[in-house]
Image (cartoon, rainbow, N blue to C red):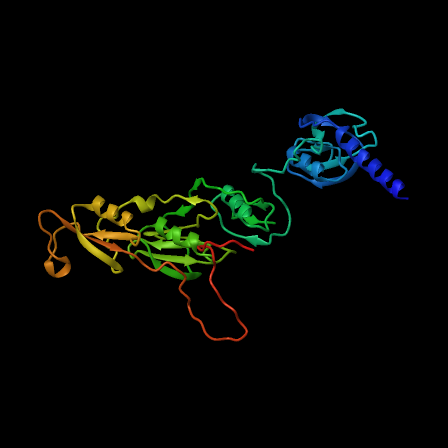
Length: 351
């Protein structure tokens, strides 16, 4: 019995090896070619490359045919037909407009992992959205899906805004521009009001706030209104107000940090002050001081009673900082709760 069991194991291994080794690695796609018959399953698919990955990951699929947008034989466009035969080869090959065929990549080594960066314009992926959000463009929607561990694909509605549906955790480090709407106000739905020096500064606040879906910035009051409503974004024309969307899931453009803002004071929160010879010197001192986050410098000689009168062309530079660690809105004793802080900034390894 033991010898017979060993025999069956060897036969099984030889069969599997024969199945793999008996087929060559064929990556090419045969455009306008159909492999008729031998269907075992049909699935929705946006293109032939996606269809080839479906065939590769199916346990028994050996080759496939994909009906694209040019296919006119029937209404089943964007379908992937998975196929197999006992001979492991297509029975027939027939030139057919709008059909692309190919082979499973199982014989290829290593087994390719699906990477599908292409955006499919004028194609809607159907399904029930489990999350919806506003983004500036399809690329930002794709980044949102990529960074959401539950998202596998998405659909972006051009006339409105996107729906993320159910990606590998790739890291995007390219700079991205969030959408700004000049002379536009988005009324209501406020969740926080913060001082900000520019619309881009306000956009940064929105981007790091977990609940902010969009914002409005009033330039003459330097007020940034963070808002939350994932279902609608009513916009009305308003002078002096800029609204916009956050820049998440990518490296934001922080050019607003590099600017100096003439005629604007950042009041309070001083950590120290000293005399210096100009704006760049003050900025350099702030940059080199690990405690400094921003600065203000007296542009002109002013009364001693306000800021100590400057002499010999020197000016007072004020280095500043604010609290950035989590500030709790409240807390209290409760025997049924355990609370704590994220270990994101700690030298911590999950066990």
